[in-house]
Figure 1 (cartoon, rainbow, N blue to C red):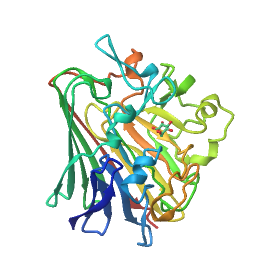
Figure 2: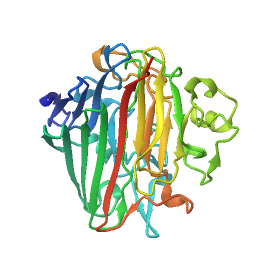
Figure 3: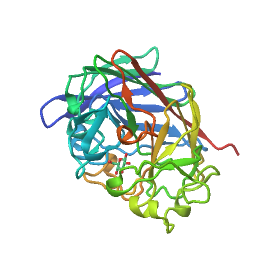
Figure 4: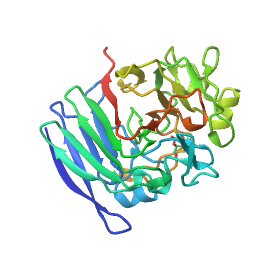
Length: 352
Ligand code: BGC
């Protein structure tokens, strides 16, 4: 048990970054950094009790600055893409940064994955709390946004990520964590043999620039269906337009109604080592991204070279580009309302 703080290098602008190492009573460890409120490592046992790091990442803060994959990053105020980088709030358009062609991805270069957060370790709760006050106009969005992200490592081998925020003007709040998982160990290569169960009977297809078309499509009879667990690699190369457009799975899945409560929405299993990961959340959607564009520039932690599909993401979220689609639940946070959402990654092993 306990929390250790160590140095994590200096950013290119000279700010010092820190690493918080949190350990639970069962020996599981999680590391988080105040740079980007980033999840840096997750060390968990496999079915034989062997420990390994199951999260892709870098060795120091400057590599995180250079990286383009958002390894373990906290994304905000708005995750995923916005068409023409135009956020719509109450009928008004707010111009965000165009950082992916004409569109915005993960809130642009002022996004929360690239800032130093105020950090507070709470050894009693086995938590690290990150706080940021986003200025009115930050990322092109209105409102002073007071935001806290808390990472807790429980004795049930869960990582709980709790997002809380409040704004003095209507704004967008749609945050996520961009962890890339490889349950066989971050250095073990391709995740196509991981088995995924996903509790979603529909997804939001995309068109040009990976922007949602606005449709909500049933997964029935398509390679997108993970309601019966299957290997990620089984259908990833299928002759199916959505998989071709995205280069594999990279889609927002529509989750069952949550009514504000946290429910279990996914399970990932790696059969050779026996590790499992369940995902629980109150969010309406999840981006299942199979790491189709992962690359090691720079080289990963421990000198590991990552490649295509070395890790998979299950980014819990509001629907992408929600402001442009009536049928999608809103991601607008009203002035004075509380933004409050939780996602849990729970680690276990297959029983014999
Ligand atoms: C997106 C991918 C993108 C990745 C890294 C994911 O959230 O869905 O399309 O390549 O982030 O930016």
